Length: 148
Length: 128
Ligand SMILES: Nc1ncnc2c1ncn2[C@@H]1O[C@H](COP(=O)(O)OP(=O)(O)OP(=O)(O)O)[C@@H](O)[C@H]1O
Ligand SMILES: [Mg+2]
Image: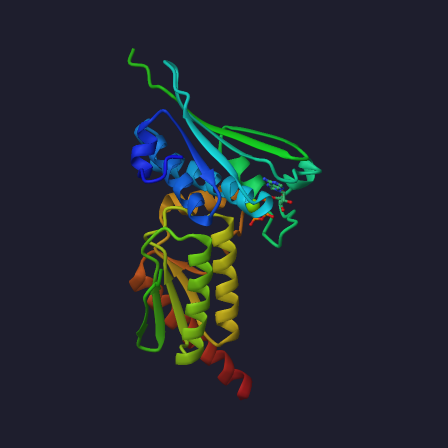
């Protein structure tokens, strides 16, 4: 969709959709997420947490489902800065979400650290899956500092 | 994408300068192990100063590369990990990266030399 534009240009829009087909799309997605977090005033630690979580989720789409999409939204309001990221695919789905979320569980020879690790890095984490559809939604939030 | 792997005294120094795709990461693993084998290096320092994301895939490849390099006779030290990367890895799960780390390249080389000396000391004790 946004091919040709840089992570910076994509992050400047308040919502971006990236196709996930090849490995370099994982790199583009995490860089775009980082850039949006940076522009919304998140610090380097939060930028890195978000970029790492996006890397895990988008790689899962490519490795376990073949292809999908990643959407990155600016959901900020007057109270808080918030970046929401959705990774979605039409692959086989996750038969047992609880098992998939357990540290060390992998069907593909990985460390099985991706999903549980990503969950620990973000404030909001939601996963829905059925055969033919998997959707993982995450968000990081930072309350705005009030000047009294 | 080729990552320079340079000899320095009895060790090799590999400096990752850009964000890598998974394929680039595996290519790097292959190249660095081949170089360790060819040069019979006693140590390997992997500099990741430029990496702003180390996820579970990268962590796994780093661990495996270190294990295999040790099998080939080289001690391994990882250096230059950004503080926010170290923090993120700790939050994701303890011991995701199971390789000795150093702050910067100088310390990385010093640490790997120390490991090499320790190993040689150990061997001599065995022989005695
Ligand atoms: N989008 C997806 N579609 C189908 N199955 C998935 C998806 N994402 C995750 N899974 C399943 O959940 C398991 C756990 O995922 P997780 O990311 O934690 O580990 P992994 O990908 O196997 O290894 P790694 O530690 O390298 O990420 C996977 O092995 C896979 O079976
Ligand atoms: Mg994974």
